Length: 191
Image 1: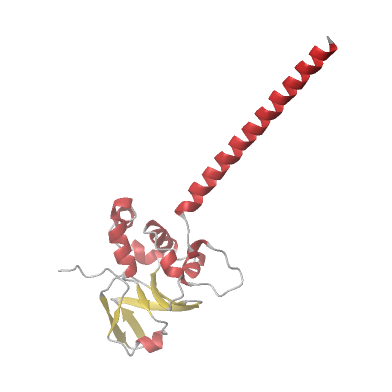
Image 2: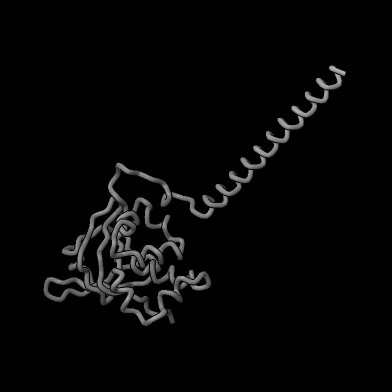
């Protein structure tokens, strides 16, 4: 009888331990799948953390209280990684107020997944290879943008306008410069 009880007790312990181990493995696999799903959507240099280097153009926009709409648009167009490359890049960054000047519903419409390519084209129209100060930009008549279109540069007194948008401030970045502008530049329609 003692042997039967010992055998039964041993059997119950083995079943209990193996079921705990199995549920733990299942929980680990589920957590791993969730983590892979989360990170697979957000990969690349834009999602690496560097607390010691000079902020890049994307980090400057993310850290700015006046560029929340721009950051949301960059994320909707999935252009984060393009803005953290070595550059140098000049980003003409419209403020939230500038986005507010667009016709009502424009931003909400542009960030829809079906408009991702249109939004990406508009955002690329705000990026130029180079790292030029506002003063140096006065020497240009036009700039070639990342969307393969040109944007006009105008000087009015001490002010510099790019694509009709006035540069109201500039911030040096680790991979270029961010020129804060007062208007969203819309690329000309291609013929």
